Length: 343
Image (cartoon, rainbow, N blue to C red; front, side):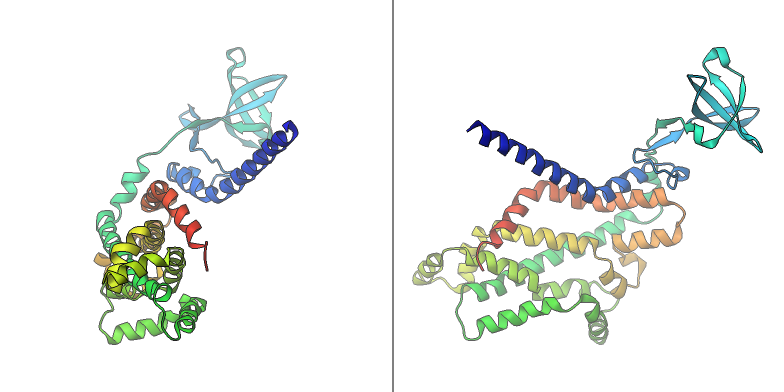
């Protein structure tokens, strides 16, 4: 019994270690994004890179700022200032210990390690957000994302209800055709959609980004259909006997019982709409209608050398997604798990 318990603990430790390792790998880009957003501009491309924002210590000697380094020499760790390079090596002046202060040495670059101190450049954030109309782009993005979420939930739930709770001729064939549309790469549909929306006079408006959501997407329909199939059919039969219409069954019975699946679809749709770059890039041509994704691209074009500012703006743009996922993760995971129970 003790042997089984010990093996189980070892297995759990290995599993958690692997999960932590994989999680850290996926989190590294975000950690680098946040770390870079708090660095000084001259520290962004330092090699080897520093994950925690810091800056090199400097000291003024002979009217010039000199970098401060540590040096192991004569079985001592010295604190030195780099004075310059000579054909024989790098000339440094000892700062500490006090007994050797002022002594000059010739060393190699490999012997010197820069002295760094924690330094968070918080002013990168207000500076970055002042360089483009952040509030206007946030309002545009939120407007599009909310309408897309509402349209997707309404259309996908109605279609999924028809595929899962109502029996009609050709239902399975039509459902397979709907699933087949997921095989089409989105890039292949950009030009036909653009031509269609141009003939409709929708280019330069939010309509091409919002209206298609009210006609459902194959993935969301599939996700909700799978969840609806897990609900007992007796609930619908009892409601029909009581005279409830199909829309009434969907609204009063199915929807309240499908909150985890609906929350999952809403969260995935909101993330996609919030971060969508291709759609706004193709259909919007007025800067006052830009979304945050387009705003970041414009920031890169105008202030390409300001990498710390770009990283700060990127962190602010992605922060709402992280916060929403943090609070909705339990419902989201439950919805994903339940939608795969029955096919």
